Length: 346
Image 1 (cartoon, rainbow, N blue to C red):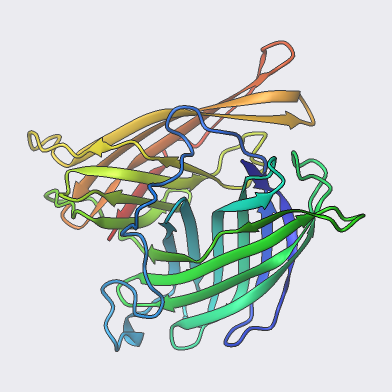
Image 2 (cartoon, helix red, strand yellow):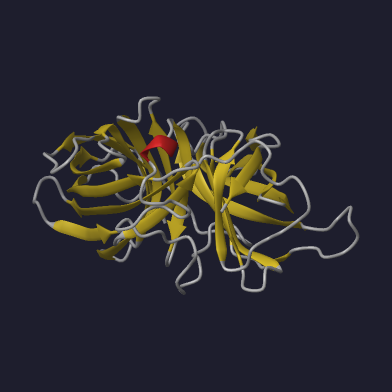
């Protein structure tokens, strides 16, 4: 998979709101172990229709809306991550997303990981919608697609509910073309993504464990980036779980990377001290060419731990990276997220 680098997007007129869009494409590699893996293809509890209120929201909720950072995402074929920053007055928002975008055409461009931002979104009565136009010359440093051009659109809708809940839809479509000949190399499309976001309270995960089966939990990490997981039917296991994270690793260039585990994680039903706990660990390998070190491999190791409470779930997800130069096998850099705590609610 390819991760897309810094690019500027031009706003297009919108029916109910305006939005300035920026985006980023970075290089990404195939996962090792249980790293970045596609989510189950079946319908998921993460989906939240925009046509109706967010989960738990009633028809008259304007008084319950509040400014803050709503974090979460969606899953269909791939786990997607979305954050929504709403100002205190509830009239202005910035939406950020880390999206897996599937492509057709050139077989070397099958999927890209797109980090995009929609800024200066006008919100009226808890709703917003708009379109941004993508126009970018991809930096030459980006593997495979470097030096090509990208053109397309980003469509979004947002609906705010009460009790720190939000929902929306998002769709990114673009072509990757040769800037000289104009020949289209690939056509890329996320499809329509229905996402949910929450402002997770600090006490999420406390109290007697009460996981709810067939439910998505959405929340934040210490880095103020999205976290989400799904509880399987019966409420006895978690799959998948995912987050985006930042670390001072050479390949990330200060941009977030998504990490998803689709491993089935049983929820402990044992003694009170361990009841409600779950966890997983894995590895991820990324190959890229560094300006400073040349061709390198970046080895990520991660460890996820969590515990359900009476209303929500909380835990930590540490990621550690080691960069090894291909020419001589020397370790040339390391990076880590630290403990990186997270919390989430339904």
